[in-house]
Length: 410
Ligand SMILES: Cc1ncc(COP(=O)(O)O)c(C=O)c1O
Image (tube, rainbow, N blue to C red; front, side, top):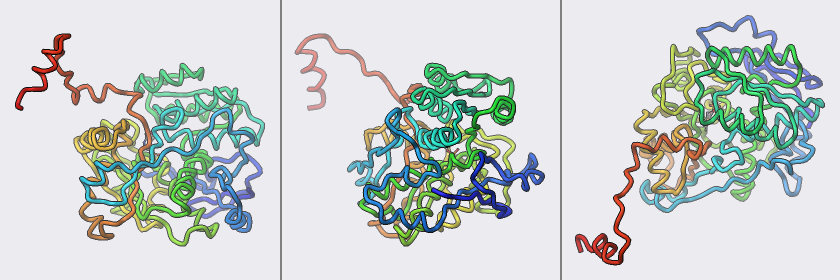
């Protein structure tokens, strides 16, 4: 589709005939204390967007800025929506559902952004993609890169969680550990792209990542019979996923397919709450440090922070903050009441709903159609359950032992 880039902060417009990242006019405003300025937003030609409303068999990828030539190497589509009776009963919410993006091929939501960047690489005939990541984005880009025969160069802080890095190494990416922080790895990956070419996929830096992430909202619209939920809970670190989720609904509205936006709720850890604070105070200040156990949402200086706050406001949404203990409890509840293993960051969305349940019902009633987005699988890091699981004692290999074991208390 034809589109232009518009700066979220100063409104400057740029054509889409070359690869663009952030707004050059906003560069000089950036400093260590505040959220970065200058994320670019993709704005489609109005007529082309509205024409999508009449299209049969509409696919989320129809809303991509660049056409994906072929999705067979690594399809990113149709993760299940589940409505577990256990959780629904416990919360007294009839219309509660979960979108299982933890089931995407690399195990996280990040496949969506990576697919859109593959389409961008194809459009500009590039074979090399560099990025910085501490986990899921790197794994997703490495996986899809392997499937499309692209070269992936991944910069990581040397202290990044080993489990998720192993995945990228196994997919064949060139992994470059950096003696520094995630921000240092981010800067070095940009240096790499400037000197050695290809595309940079850094989250929020490359606006096409948000366009990939929005595919979840269009998929939801298709799966829910051309409707959208009333309220969507999203786990938030950098603010890129939530910006993508919101952009999907905005595109659907601008295409004339829905007449109102769902309320988007950002769930953050109390120990990593830069975006929630900015939403409440109107001051876009980085944190000194972020320390939550939910590593994927542990972010001190959110790369898409300004955009995320703008999108939450636009949807008349709000923020919920949860403690690490509430995240752990939600992770276990997802396993026990829903049959789902989600990583701590993903479980935060459910923790937010659990915390918010009473005020949600007060505002919207018990019939509210509410959806939690589960963004990553716990299978990548089952160690998080170590303390929660006590292995039961073995019984003798005999029928008597079975009778003894289950007769107790009869
Ligand atoms: C599983 C999972 N959930 C949530 C997030 C948060 O997304 P964002 O940093 O775009 O807010 C991430 C980001 O890495 C993630 O990997």
